[in-house]
Image 1 (cartoon, rainbow, N blue to C red):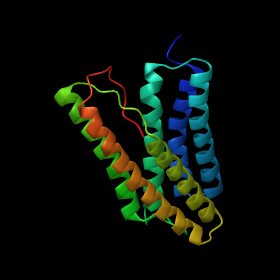
Image 2 (image 1 turned 90 degrees about the vertical axis):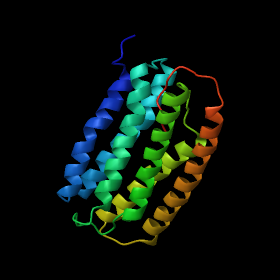
Image 3 (image 1 turned 135 degrees about the vertical axis):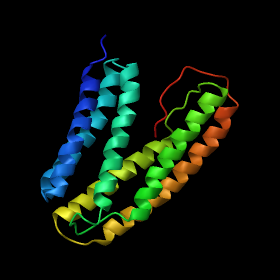
Length: 193
């Protein structure tokens, strides 16, 4: 089996949709931006499902999929935060900084642990997956109400839920990292959440 499986092709498509999404938001085509983001989200759900069902798991996919997720979500959060883009609803800067910082710290700590005491297996946690789902849902909610050019308390609620899940998932990862330090070295895998 080659590395360019259907699952990996869907992941690559997700990465290719990111610049289109940014341009659509910047130029005010918010309906198309929302649709593009939803298609990217569907490719995220499908690539993992296809990889598991068709037994198409690859090393490339193990690295590419979490990278594509992070690129999509970080880009989306940054674009929806920028005050220079005329949107009805923006994500608060503090939330975007907090979400990105959480991921940077987790990846950095895993890298330091791997360099200091050897590679460790670091699998996504349930809280990490919930955080990703929450970020996607928060992005969809913000984009939907931007498309409608309408302020909504639902946007504010989504922001606070995203913050809460970020805090809990970050704490969960640090508990797991403490255990990880005491485990024997394993085959190196990507850190993702």
